[in-house]
Length: 336
Image (cartoon, rainbow, N blue to C red; front, side, top):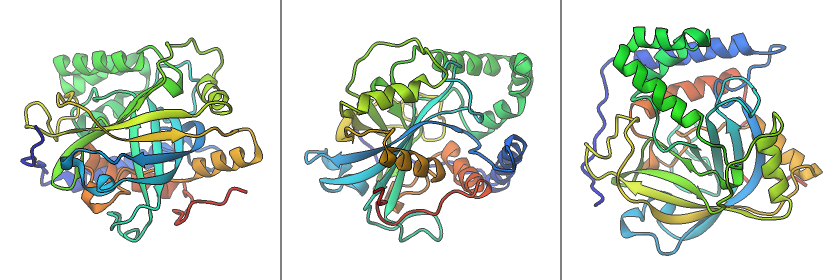
């Protein structure tokens, strides 16, 4: 049962710590910059950028009648598929897979200062429905010990304790090494919560395509495969949400816990037939690569929640500014 009795636990020193985390990411961006041009701190490799549309269903549950889901409607979208690593590595390497959706024509006051009147909203999700890490502190501990990779397990256990270090490594490897389905058949999850009016929810884009896992034949096989698919066939994901019910089974602050509440469908995300190799398709892909996608670029009644999300509020902005992302568009771009 959906409950509104959720709350965040904000530590008094969070703001200072999160600023230091953001500074570390900017430092890593600068170290990885090629010819002086910084890339994203994470999800550096864009598999492919495509046009899409999110349709909100007319029969969403009463509890979901808030934010984007307050009424039926359609939103044009730009959709970025990516690998999670901070470097543009081969698709064959174990990695996080992500989707970022920028919706157009979204009303309501937005959260980020200076962008309150924006008509866009971003939705970000990854391939796993929970994280191996509880909070931002654990995430940053992993970032700090990630190189050299051979020493990562020992250094992580030294930083977080043997038991917790082993648990994180096992959970991370389980997600990274999961069989890779084509992107058209891969489902994506917010993995951490956001507000929806008085409720707290997680959301997901669940693929309708049920294709079996594939062996990646080339370093860029994921994007190439999805591009081939949308040249002839529309790709559809059901957008689903699940509600906070209680602090034990649907925690706000612990991102490592898989929420147990049931999923309900609130809409569909469709990638229509399009040719990514056409002049229009290339312009779409290039613009998406330049844009920023930020979970905090959202309606005020859909504010991100929890420790991980609060840390992202600082880190994403710093990363976006460092790489000089394109200005936020107000209207859907003309790609002709």
